[in-house]
Length: 309
Image 1 (cartoon, rainbow, N blue to C red):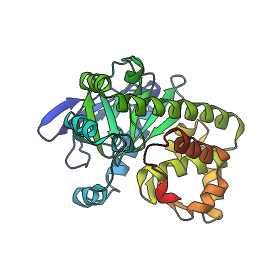
Image 2: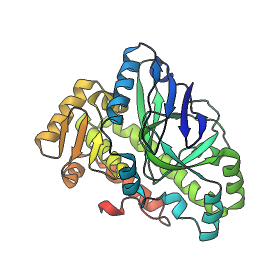
Image 3: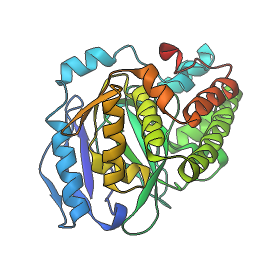
Image 4: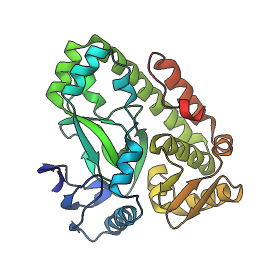
């Protein structure tokens, strides 16, 4: 099993059989910094993921600096609530630090908590077979994880994997159901958000089928840039290949093309967004479509994209 200590209590997160391997160990979280003492199996993918986690942990800013930088970020769904509803909702929430590579839920697993990222982001991954997977959604402070509970379903259809570590608000499933019953405003906001997610899934399917890797990579980097609130992204080509469902050589060529155009810089798993406007021009229209759909559907909510407009 996989454990994270937040403050003084241990919380069981999950085992990690994603793509045919097991990832487990004891993990200590202290102010958003990852711990050590990780045991893992010997598969190639497991070794890669363990290496990626170690790389990320040694290339992040200090805990106090990170918290100072992140203090101003909120979750847009919660911010959209009326004042009294927001107060009641926040009273049931627990602030947590999500740690890179944590698995929050697996397919067909009971959802025990919902998560509202404030300055972290979660990758929703669909396992194709024992060796392949595809990211189908990315959840940052514009959304939430655990949306199935809004529909009355208590199981997760996808892997929920922490891709960007940082703070989030967490609520147990039963208080969340109670909040839905007691707050028509919350129910309405999350119904709109469900429409957003359905729109994103449809757009993702079309994008994967019809658009070239370079356009899809530019789109993915923009989506991550929106949620990371930073120009600096720690991502390996191998990780991108898994997320986009393509071969690593395809990602290498696409990233090289974007770098030649001075849109990004890349070295040893470190990507820096240099020219965001140029990256938007290089992306397929799906990024702009997703952005417009969020603005339209969540028209009564604060937009997470306003800082980039």
